[in-house]
Amino acid sequence: MRTVCHFSCGAASAVASKIALAEGPATIINAFIQEEHEDNARFMADFEEWAGVKVTRLQDHKFGSSTLKTWTAKRYIKGPLGAPCSTALKRDVLGGFARPGDINILGFTAEEVKRFDSLCDRFPGETFRAPLIERGISKAACLETLSAAGIALPAMYLLGYANNNCIGCCKGGQGYWQKIRRDFPERFYQIQLVQDSIGPGAGFLRFRSGPRLNERMMLSELPIESAPEGPEDFSCSFHCQMELPL
Image (tube, rainbow, N blue to C red):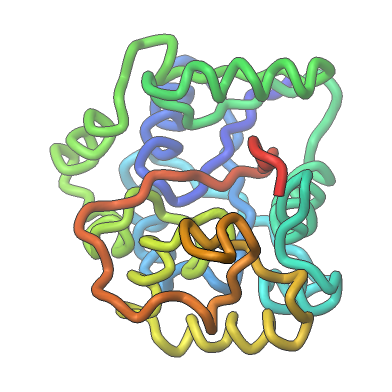
C-alpha cells in the first residue's frame, strides 16, 4: 500500500503533500503539461527543498503533454463529462502510475468538502484523503503557510488568478478569459485559432444576455472590455468532470 500525493504545483497540493510526508513515507507525483506557467518549475524545486523529497514527474507522450494538441486531435475542447485534456494529460497519465490499494492524497481545502465528497462518490473503487479538510485548513491558510516557509507563490497567483491551472483553462468563465487575453495574448490567440479550426461546437463560454442567451460563445466573440478585478475560482484536477451540462 502506497501513499501517493498528487502535486499540481498549486499551494493547496503542496501543503497537503507536506502534511502527508510528516505522517510517513509518501510518493509525490506531478503530471506535467506544456501550457502551465514556466514558473511552476521554480515552485516545484522550492517545494522539493522544503519537503525534502523529489517529485516524480509523469508526462503524456501521445499528445506531447499539450492541451492544444489534445484538443486538436480530439476535435473538441470541453464536453458534457469534462475536458479531454484532463483525461489524456492527467487521469490517463496518473492512472498508469496507480496501483491497487493506493491512498491518494489530494489538495482539497476546507472550503471544498462537497467537491471532495462528490469525487469520492464518483470513484468508489479508489481511496482518497484530503488532509486539509481533515484539519480544517483553508486555501488562504495554505498561501500563508508557503509564505511563512519563504516559498514565493506561483506566478499565476501573483498575477491575481485563484488557481495555478494551465494558462488558458477551458473551465474558466468570461472574466477569466478576459484576464488571459490581457495577460497572455499570444496564448489566448493560439487557443482561439484551435477553437476556430474545430468549429462552433468548440465554444466553451456562454452568452449571458441578449438574443443569444445561453448559446455557446467563441473566444473571437468575447466582449472587448476590461478584465474584472479579483480572481475567478475554479479548479482542474485529474478527476475533472463538468458539474453542469453544456
